Length: 372
Ligand SMILES: [Zn+2]
Image (cartoon, rainbow, N blue to C red; front, side):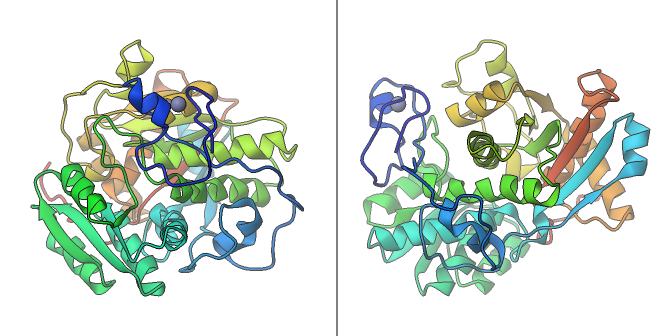
């Protein structure tokens, strides 16, 4: 395992609080599994979803719930409207429980089994809770979901349906830390300032990069636009592209764009410390929160990417527009189109650029906002 901030190496193990050295220095950072070698790296195994790439992941056996192989399609008319060379979508909402979290959950459960844990716990606004409950049930493991007191009934029902046990609180991370001290295996961050989710789980997001490259014959979009909170998804996807580049499967890596509902990373990229409190609020709960992680900052900087701040109103307008085209997306997911529109308008994206939007969640359990 290595720390992408201080470059120190650590024995293989669980690091829910990230790199011990960086934690002591007051600048928390995640750790990343490092592979000595990956025999037959180029091989894509004859199976489905994550298990096609199991030889590039931390565990040889995972409780797959049918995740991955999500649809990708082009939007040529919208690309013309925006003045782009190409625009495409990867729809993570098509995963079994409706979000990209399904790529993380089987790996978290495999890591919990390795750690001899009998129960897992996750702090969630919805998507991660439903997903981890489904993967835990597959392995007959108990799963506790720490949720805000005002979680919508649709999400509560979905989590209960998958067998998750709900705990309500006003401080999700504090509650998750207490559950960890009781012996539950944590899937997500519980620290302030945060380090991000379970590093084995985040490895699952590398498969998004693998699928994009395998489906485009190694033609990589110039930009990949990702809704972000702590940036697990953007970071994991970036790790996948870095790996593909290192192994010679692609000649160039994409530039990663983080989409956020109020300035957090935007302030960090202008010089503020990522270890800060960023005031602001949003109705886009899946990308809410008042913090930035080292992993998010690093992925955007290393990829020569950027950040786009979108309003709730714009995201919800795009959600409605997508719905009229029969594309169902959570409001947080639809924020990517508001970002692409803004980045075309301000000239960040140009007529030579190809752009891919990651739709993170179908929003099948989200309440519909009738009034903005
Ligand atoms: Zn470190």
